[in-house]
Length: 64
Image (cartoon, rainbow, N blue to C red):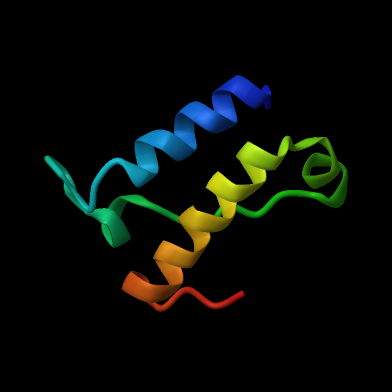
């Protein structure tokens, strides 16, 4: 998956809690990457991924 696509997906996921098809918890899932993919992330992408997963932990009860 390209870095631009990851950033775009994360930005869309973080844009709001409610969509026309349901709330954040209904339409989002934890983002889990392989170690190799994590190593390839920029600092900005890593922060966005972490923010998405922390939001899911807080709102949806996701576990690490």
